[in-house]
Image (tube, rainbow, N blue to C red):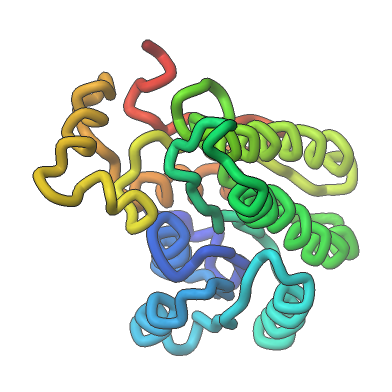
Amino acid sequence: MTFEEFAGKTIFITGAGSGIGQAQAVAFLENGANVFGLDVDMAGLEIIRQQFPSRFQYKRGDVRSKRDIQEAVESAISCFQHIHILLNTAGVLDSFSKTLETDEELWDRIMDTNVKGTYLVTNCVLPHMLKRSSGTVINMASIAGLVAGGGGAAYTASKHAIVGYTKQLDYDYCRSGIRANAIAPGAIQTPMNAADFEGDGAMAKWVAEETPAGRWAQPSEVANLTLFLASKASDYMHGAVVPIDGGWIAK
């Protein structure tokens, strides 16, 4: 998928070291963009920089740390002058734990990463976008933000929060040149759900069978949707939550 409009634009991506975030980084780089990645996975970030040494920069950091975020955003602006597009992709799962199986430590880890991390990164990048009266934010929700069964108690609550946060973010700032939408993936084959493929892969097979499309998706498919949502072609889409789930929630 080719979008010439991204040439010279700067994309800031959390969770860029693996899975969907890494696929997003590569997709935008292949379309001529500059990309700054933030992740705790240094090895994954370095793999991208070896492919695109002049247009990809990164910083190791945790989205739960306000200091890490501030330093990364400052570095991105120092390297590329502006941040045009923000992709809040970093997130963690909760092993489908029910509420009575979710201790406070797990609840806080999920909420601090998935929800507070998105809030902290957005609040650090947004002022720079508002100065230019232009910016696009794409948050990573999930089918777990739309229906039950896509995660455990904490994960499902966190992704429902992302859906609401995205809608309010767009509502509050769309007249100031900011556009915010969210993506709601279903079964995407990433390192985050590698456990489903272990052994005889029974869980992965079950998920594929339960998905109307009959398969898992690859991270590159989510990256392609991201390109569209970040492009001028979707300019009238505001506060939308777009499923990419092989028909899972259509059942």
